[in-house]
Image (cartoon, rainbow, N blue to C red; front, side):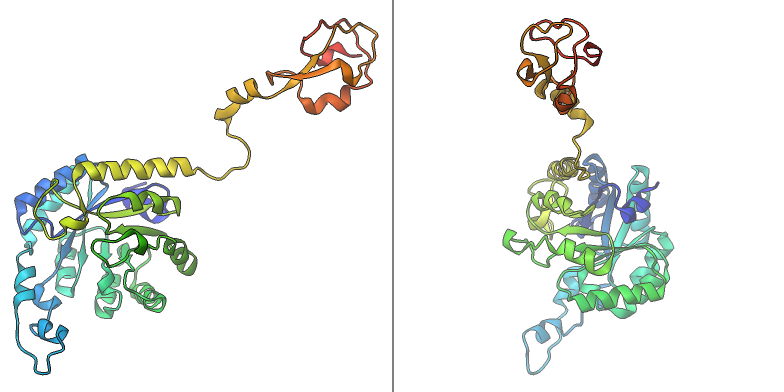
Length: 345
């Protein structure tokens, strides 16, 4: 089974290092982050691909201020322009990731970006929460017929359902939803991790967690709720200056997050009621068997006062007591000795 299949079956945890725009527009920094992500145990690295002029209107600032007269302002477009990597640079980064066994993919924010990612033959697409209602983008991504991971922050159930329907109708066959909350950083009281279970019940899909908290604690808790896909912002090192530093983990912190998630999954277990075989040694020592309370003579009829219930539990089980009472002893049994089936006629 390859990494992509693991994502959609939910059989093993899948860890995505969200490099996003934390590379600051530097190819060298992006390549270094891929190497660090591999060392930290990530299964995949994810970038953010966009054309700033396709993402923001030149009137964005004026509109957000509710200006009566709209004024052009290119500051948002210019800001995000600093983080654009070209197709040739992505091609280099994809090779870097694949050489280290990582899945390389990206969040696409516009149709030209999808076209470029298709030329790179990425194996999977990510859709950010902001694009849940972007029907043209959903249709184009769906038409690739490639697996999709979609975040669901700042979205209603109806909007998520509409996006799922659009993707399905356009060609998407494999789809994972990510619970997330569009707060940066995410305070604990707003995490709403129980939404993972609600999303799974509502849509019948695998549901993971895209975490915007400053640490990785929430991922281990999400694992206990069944999440197996974990997306976490990633930075080159502690104190690194990058746009999403407040919600990003250093390589060491990412490794710890992964270890904590795997430990949580291991501790969660499979829910069986019967005790695990690994407890057998303890059970043998701690449970009880049937013993003679005194010297028993051949021909004697076994009575309750002649039986002691003691450790260890490797002899006749206590449940056999009723069956033995009234039976005749075939031979002598010394005091404090385990009773055996062959002791009786």
